Image 1 (cartoon, rainbow, N blue to C red):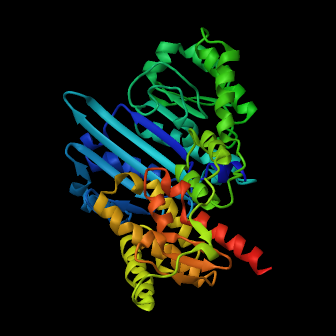
Image 2 (cartoon, one colour):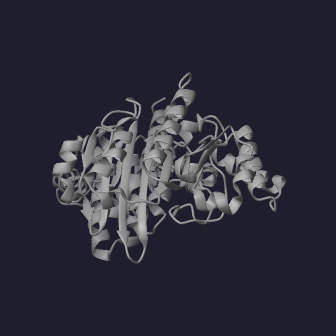
Length: 450
């Protein structure tokens, strides 16, 4: 697994903040911002726009935006979101307002996904360069107060307490790939000292701001070279810090980007992989995968030797089977066809998807008694149909559902009892998954047939 596959949800995040609100001067001032956005390289330039309260995306043009300008306000805040309709995924978000209490708030953010786009061989330098050019162009439009460009997942792991609110002036907690300091921060650090910071690029911008990079591109943000560059720059700006301890913290964070092999128990591997993928971005994913690697579900106990299975005690065996495979099984499809569309297909992939949904959504914990008594027959019948249709089993109905069995070879499997166990508590859908019982029955059926 590559680092990009391990952290498949990561993006580049570029946030810029300004001390002027162009909307105070009307649409003509906003046009300068729009012109800069339109100057983005064609391979990342957005082409669709959205307005407040509208779900559908419209083709972007300045004329269309001007016409719908009143729809771009939430209270006193002007908001604009532009997206790219083709890969890579690009979101450009602009917001501005001016109030007596808060003064000016103005920000522009770019999210570019996947991050691997910035690592493409032969393209990394060029793509980094046009992002830097975009920041320069925005600095010519509006005076910058702060800016940061970096891998979104690494920003999420940052120890900077203000990383989720970058709009306010603040001390320097960390350094990133791209850094922009406005006049107030430059003055606090000292322009001469700031310009002497070890960097891959140091450039003075209009209106007193400074742009600088720790590395030529963001592509290797978690490498040893990048971490050393980030640490040296930070210690230069804050000499009270220790280079060794700063670097140690960054190195520890880089470990999160080193893939851990997913060596999950094969009977529940699909379920655990779905959960690991759902976690997506980093921050505990490594520990999660390591925990899943250690996990082993309890051995399947919902079976009897076929010779010990009690005979059917129902009045009409065919009617009972029709109830299992018709009413009960179809109840499950009706309940989950939207959340787990795989149940509509009747393929084997439905089982792990259903198990994951029951576990992830905490069905075992939040069911009322009445809901559980409805879901147990539905889940048991759904599992039983796979034992019959895929493994060639034979129903042995019983009046008490938990005793109803599917005979495969020399074993009688108890799908309704398994379903009850799977819904008894929060972790039960994993500990007593349908997938594990089916795969156990499948293995033993093969052994019996040979």
